[in-house]
Length: 277
Image (tube, rainbow, N blue to C red; front, side):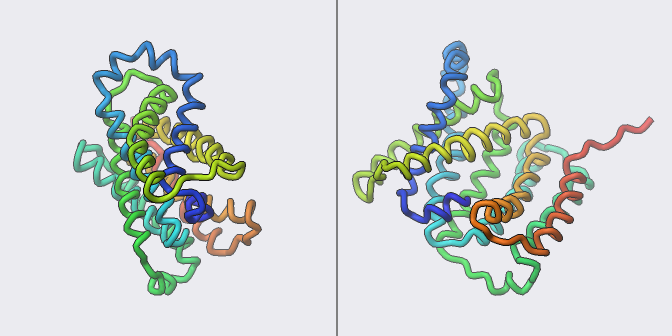
């Protein structure tokens, strides 16, 4: 999301998504190629699932987010994505009957309050003054796709380990993005492939590509989509921390208040209940 706002159209959005995941796949293959070859029968059987997950996680959550960064603000992106844990819980419950305890629901509510406090910069009046633009609709679309991706990731059968499975999903994402990248290159613009652009491709492949998606896959496998989705509430806090570290922006009191709400909310939402006698 920070890259989306920082880039703001400098690199064509589909090109950024396509090369992000192409670089990611190239970096994963040395570790996953052997397992993918051995599991080729599973890939033949499950290819619609990998294509679907690639469409959701690397397609809809790719270029539309980068395109939205041209017109919308980081505040709006954070506010809209704050709804994803609620959507994920409802999808997991409605589609697969995943149980949601009152403790989890309470943790989600507390985390949401902390997130909204940070997004609103400690002033509820800021929500009245927020303005929504066309880019916000793209973020809503991406948020819904991410929610479906999170639930489907947990409930789609696989015989692969997390790294190999991610490589298969990324391959599906590259395939989904390819025709749109070709159309963008022919009819809109092509990326320059200068040093800055290549460095951007490498960064988004390593950090929000392999780093975040692989960790999120492992968390979902261990905690389930409802509990894992709570990490999304940390986005505004991480955004503030990165802005302080990289851009020199100052942390404010409302960041600390939001953190004070989110940490107990995360504990409530993710801690396993203690078994009784």
